Length: 279
Image 1 (cartoon, rainbow, N blue to C red):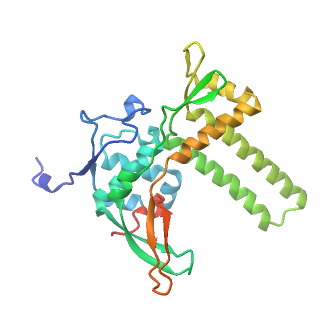
Image 2: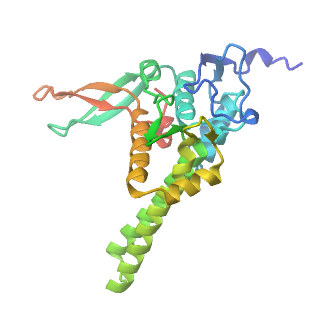
Image 3: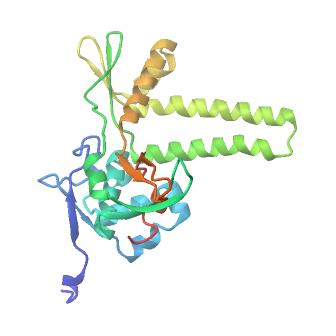
């Protein structure tokens, strides 16, 4: 037995996942009996991993650190994004404490103010969609599910590449015809990305007779061939559900005594700077 065992890291906090484990594949998660997941602080290797720009961009660093600090998570790629981001806030608390330093520019006087926020409050006040409310398309009921962390990262990368291609045409020496071709192809690809990913947000479709359709190929064919009106209703319903997932609004007061402007701002999770420095 290692004589230093008593000095190894141990769970700092315990949290329940927003999904309560639903939508996780069985082999991707080990559910505790009491549904409370132990969260350990980052070790030195984790700290270095979270500073790897390429790993942060493609999500690999996030997955590696989550699986290291939350041993019950076996495959973070497969879990809902809302669970993974929730765990990252818990991980930040476990590693550095509940207080986190931030800096914000006042929308009125444009002066920058440094202040602290309570991550425990953020953790307790995050809003999550109610996936029990279906989208009604005539006599069909569409039940949604949250996006997986893998899907969220893949979509973000694909959108980034297409947006970068569009931006590149503005400063390039291409001919007008070449630019128009790139723009047309990029816009078409953005549209295809949007349509192809919708199936990933659908848990199942309830038929009038109570039959549940959950075959991805059948649902994808339905998305591809449904009429324009129903397609737009489906997309709007998915967008509305995604918009319900958000961190709370936090108070802000400008430190400029001649301004003292007060406002609120939405806390945003960004893994690239979330662990940039100790609080």
